[in-house]
Image (cartoon, rainbow, N blue to C red):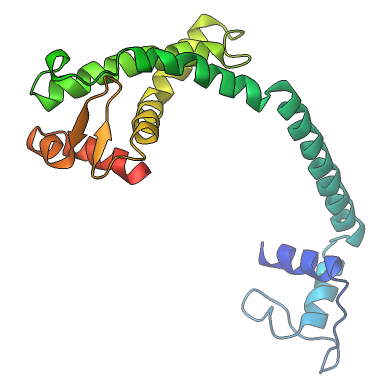
Length: 198
């Protein structure tokens, strides 16, 4: 692998070397760095081809151009405004139950967090259904994707909602939970992860 990289660098940068000896230096695994000229000559003698490196480089350029094309077609296919529309459409559902009145919540932070997570998960499913192409997937695939990413999405949504809150999180129910309450309830690690996302 070392000689392969050396050969590619030599061809790509169009480097030329000179031998300080008689152009017959011993090139083996231990002494390959002793003379670059003889090392390059050995690469050629072993069948390495300059053209192959240049063709590989050309293929890489073409692949890069096709990636740019596919990215732009992806942007047309997955417009940001549709994703924002999905966000706006589900956000009012959060607002309808975010009165934060103590009468609707218990004093137990774990119960409050579980209730908020339950509501937020429902909102996340509604949001996902509105994302372009998600609902085109087979139902089994939709379920697999949501199961695989629900925890990251949940933490991201708690974090997003809590950006303006100091040393606490704002639950989907509208209740503010302070760091000390979360730690005393035994959910401090989840809480700290949400805060670290801010």
